[in-house]
Image (cartoon, rainbow, N blue to C red; front, side, top):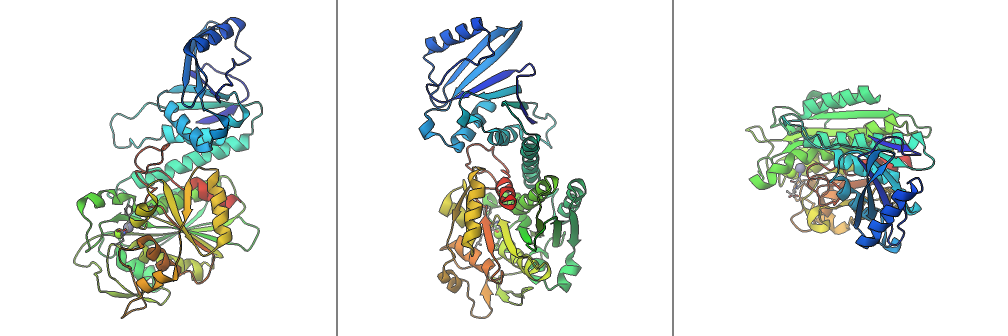
Amino acid sequence: MFNILNSLEKEYNFQLYLLFENSFEVPSFISKENGEFIRKVALKQGFKGKRLEELRVNIDENGKIQTLLFLGFGKIEDFTQNIYREILFKILSTIEGKVAIAALNKELILPEVAGEILYNVNYNFDYFKEKKSDKRIELDFIIESCSTALVEEINTLGVATDIARDLVNFPANIINPNSLAEKVKDFGKEYEFEVEVLDEEELKKLNMNLLVEVGKASATKSKLIIMRYMKGESDEKIALIGKGLTYDTGGLCIKPADSMFEMKSDMAGAGTVVAVMCALSKLKLRKNVVALIPACENAISGNAYRPSDIVKSMNGKTVEIINTDAEGRLALADAITYAVRNEKATEIVDVATLTGAIMVALGTFATGVFSNNERNYKKLEKACMDTGEKIWRMPLFEEYKVQISSDIADLKNTGGRMGGAGTAAKFLEEFVEEIPWMHLDIAGTAFDSSIKWIKKGATGVMVKGLYNYLKM
Ligand code: BES
Ligand code: MG
Ligand code: ZN
């Protein structure tokens, strides 16, 4: 739990004081004697407040032993919010209990960022462990004036990020298209948004054959999970689409064991959009948003779809299946058509663990973004600046279209190894029918990322970035 207070109200296990190099001072409310003592210790240690430098002092204040921790952030001119994230994550990972933070320099008063990091540190996926982690921090940020709306937003986004992380961390024997739909219905009740679920029968009636085909080898068939939150005043209607592959074996083009292991996370896009819906509904954004999850499992059986099959999409284009492991773009393509034609979306944003190639291109700390709309991309870039979520724009070159053209159908589902993230995005673009669209490839960032202030496992990446985007 994160809170903002205007004075040290309780007894704390730790009081953290954040400062830039050479701005060390003793907080004014410390008694004169203790102040003298702290100054002496700082002098003896040569404490300057260089980046990551720490000064720990125990004092007896009004008969209570207090642990003060002065924490250096280095030179102000080198400072960035991501340095703040990194340092806070490091220090909070080493302590526990009730913690107060105060900043000795005004540039270090960043409660949103501190709250974000608190949730990153407190999150543990210990649902299946007999012994749960009891290392938890309760954090109070001490600032002169505080706003309850800001506190609520920080905590809601923290909880929503944890919802996304849990959905991803739960393995595929727990989360399948059915149980995912049930969980989303529960979130819809709790957070007050509408949920509708289409089953395989209904998908067939709608000609969502790509989505049906990908999921047909599984014991739990494909579903389209629809969430609606319509509180906007304009005609604008944004469709958020999250890839919901509850497991991706690769299908008949089976993945090697090492690469298959991580594939419970192939519904991270779905987790992201569910979490964003929870947050925007709880925080009552004035927007019209419909979120869609094409949910399915890419399994293997005698009934599996095969390389060389030709399938007609909802939009009418036929697709030659080259590789059954390029399943995400198939499931997403029909969801995009559904958003365009049945929901009449005025804008589409899809989030997907789509390609291994995006990690080769960008690493595992940045999300690749493809868009046919300059303005929306710039807006997303701004939205993500505040959340420390690195994004990078990728091209939708015409040449990719050549790579995914088939001799015997309208499209192929893969375009070869070269430019793999681009050809996947280009495939999706074939279905957006000129509507402003962004595709976020989170394959590198959603799970076991190298983002320095997030633990291993599911990251909950882009929940906050997309929330900010919708808020703008
Ligand atoms: N779900 C994977 C992409 C992925 C890889 C996500 C690693 C997270 C971590 C996707 O369905 C896939 O298998 N893509 C293939 C496409 C290829 C067959 C054209 C890939 O990237 O290898
Ligand atoms: Mg695959
Ligand atoms: Zn996949």
